[in-house]
Length: 161
Image (cartoon, rainbow, N blue to C red; front, side, top):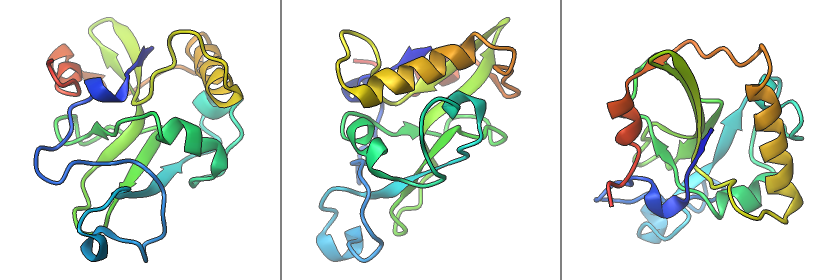
């Protein structure tokens, strides 16, 4: 599992993504791109990676803590057939393809990439539960990503700093 601190994730130079969830009413066209610039998340709560993380298909308060310590993964350099486990919904004015969690096959291995850092000494119940759910998923037979990724594509998710 590759979990990334937000400062290591490559963002857009023009109109950078600032994660959060707010209604479409508070959109960036009216607020001069005041953060947040995203409208929340979309996921499949039945995906086995989220089996032990309570969620619905949309943003809810358990995602707040993760989102406020995360960076959006840019999907523009990744294969078009990649289906994120957790998708980030960009503002309607920019509508860029973004994610918080993806998985794929790299060479003879498998990888799960998160746009939030689950390393170090975690004390909050949200991060601990997400980490447990993801690790259990990766150790199960259900962890069988279909999309092939190249190491260079994974590198493109990072700032390079």
